[in-house]
Image (cartoon, rainbow, N blue to C red; front, side):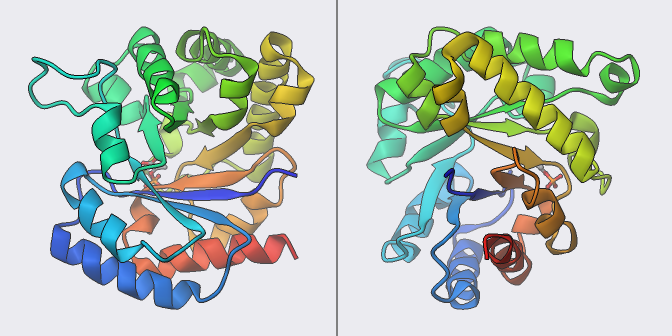
Length: 256
Ligand code: PEP
């Protein structure tokens, strides 16, 4: 049984003060819900404050939005996996489509980061997904296959099991246009089949695959009810603590 995992990707939003306010409201709204694993992914500057605020919340973990693959050195503007561990991050989002398109990250770079995350006991949330042109051109499976093989190359089956894959169709991110539950399920099933072809069915069955792309309180339950959808990576709707808590609680309801 895969534990559902809902992550809040704040992107370049939230000051330290706003982080403090968010966390106290969110924890109050969440109450004693424990069935769903929650990951808060603040900008680097706010991670320490979030860590302090979430210290006692057992089902809420911390993540970062990116990292470099090297241990240390002359890489101005970057942070390492060890630095993220130092502020109690358990997860790191890698290869988000904004990193790929705005900052030119390739599958090769995402792969180096994924391997470095595992080497430092950080769980990567590896993002993949097609553009609208690729979907319209019938290339969804080809794109996903290439991104999976490129971004996850060299992982052991155990490392794969501890990774999270986020399927985020680029056309659904921040657009208000959500994939239908069936479109998302089809892509997730293809991803799991591809993982099984490479790493074997037992490992593929353990990997959690999140859906990302305009997830909101109103559409969370239907998406999360799909058999291969194991959670969500939420952008815009994760900035409002009550709405984000509602997404988590609506997911918990699906579990009964
Ligand atoms: C994201 O940034 O990963 C994302 C899915 O954003 P949104 O929920 O705003 O579409």
